[in-house]
Length: 274
Image: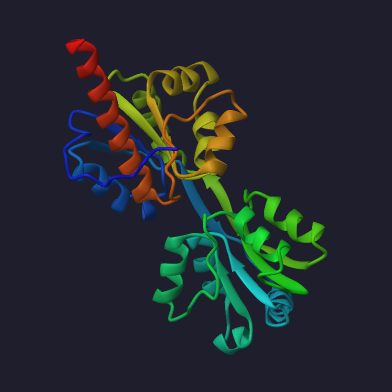
């Protein structure tokens, strides 16, 4: 994993960086790339669609949340769609909240809520370990999530004998509006790096492009991912990420990418001098 220095040096100058996050989430990431002198190329691959519920289904699940010991948010999306579904805030009275990720915790505060626990590292496995070693305890947890969410967390709680009230609140779908732009970027010699902030982005990158084209792009460009889960999704395709930050946030991913190029340039200069 790469060190994240957060240098203000223009270490991404002359580098075009593909940003595959959803439209609503790519702004700050693009700005961070510009801070290092890079050229962000936003091509959103992921979009989200709310799942419809009948009144009965909605009330049944919210009651399950109300009777849970912990409410667990694994992403900002899961939080946003949950708050959209919530009918009255007092349903959460007495229910502790866990947030997987620094940004998810900050998003909670924007709603006037507070995370009782944020695991470090920011992973579902670290959260499970807190329950496994007795630091946290529960008879039932509630987990709102998306259609493509990894089931490792749900299965982990089941293995611990903890009841899980889970619900798919949104569909994660391919954003096909930028498919032509993606196809052009994949074969462009100007493209230097590709970033993935979720396994879903990896999935749709390979779905929207012919295999020969996406493999060529991933082999040619520097590949940066937000964390281990996303790196694992690439490894299943036979691709090893070049950049994985120590802290699993989008900003840290770009910091680590900048450090990668800084170290690469330093190695190149040393070779020339020797």
